Length: 112
Image: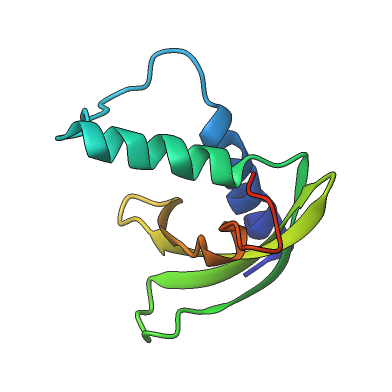
């Protein structure tokens, strides 16, 4: 992936949790629990800064997907988070999946 494409993907990933205004064509969550999961994901992904550290083909072998490694920085720690992005037919990329395990609290580490 070219550096400019990486920058565009990173910008989209970083801007996504902080988007404001009125989103277009957003489908409401089907259950209250789904809404709570989205709020938890947003909190886990909150960071002071981020940096794309690598990009490679998706391990599932899907040619329209890429695995993007992103370091998220907070005052107390750094977490390396894997994002799978998918190319759209009309162009552009969307986040397909996020590996949240590196962001989860453990007994020795406080959560976000």
